[in-house]
Length: 91
Ligand SMILES: [Zn+2]
Image (cartoon, rainbow, N blue to C red; front, side, top):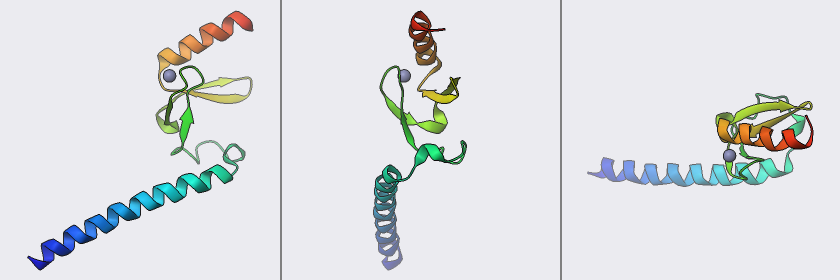
């Protein structure tokens, strides 16, 4: 039974470690120049949908290349709606 207690203890430590890692990773990524790095290297960051303002993981986003910059949307619907709205202003 000592082994089971040890495993539980180890699991809790692991979870705490992951939380700390995620927390530290978030706070450091704010200071790093994210957009200066080549595309494809940082896929695990949260990014804001310019249409619906929702935050989601960048790697799961729908990419749209516009005027030399990459925009990311949470879904193809948001991308299409965004394009529709922007299409009224400039094409
Ligand atoms: Zn969206």
